[in-house]
Length: 327
Image (tube, rainbow, N blue to C red):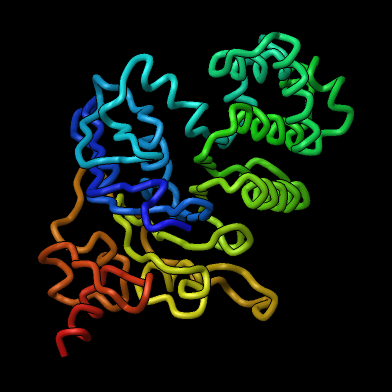
């Protein structure tokens, strides 16, 4: 890994302005991902994970979105790209595996046509060369009978095959950055494991920098090198997978870990986090997690906590940590 991050997000704020009230979906996110590293963005639905991910492709509608901060990927400030420059960046430098491939893939074109179109858009190759590469990609992602599947429409394939085809499309132009938005959510358990192992294998083989969005900490453990925990549009804890699993310091991270099922608790009730995430159109002035936190104190309601360094590469936002450092 180099000292210069492949992805460097600084103080990113994303506000959607199309409704009656502005929705503050992402609030001051700062993240970096090194070359060849896998970062998992972990949190409940509505925490801002997918919005952060789509900012890396500058996909938010311009007329209904207010953006600030910087998103630098592969040396380019993505928020300043537009037109042809943005189209050249998408697919060639960075690509995305969407959550539901049946919706992401075009239903009126075959899988092969969609992959070859992406290749020919970004590279000066013939139709025959693009077809050969598309076939090789389907073989790489281990789709059975790849020659036949090139001629198949998305609805003619199973969920697992569609997801593999989506991965092949994302890798078509040899990107340096791969963004995966809940890539296993719609799949059954056995296929989920196959897709996760495939992603990890391809990431290592190709040296990709990956950001994986998930609400499942088990997925993060299987695939990621580091984890960033998001809540109400803010990163509340970051650390290695080992740090997050063995020494979670933010109450929200602790709650996520406590609420998962495991073998030792057969027949016991899950220790769920009480309440619900806050309204992003009316965020409280203090810590957004305070209304659900059993450790909340008066200081938690005043202002959002500062980031506290716990150890090398491990940091969290919590008043209790700030007080511990001060003491």
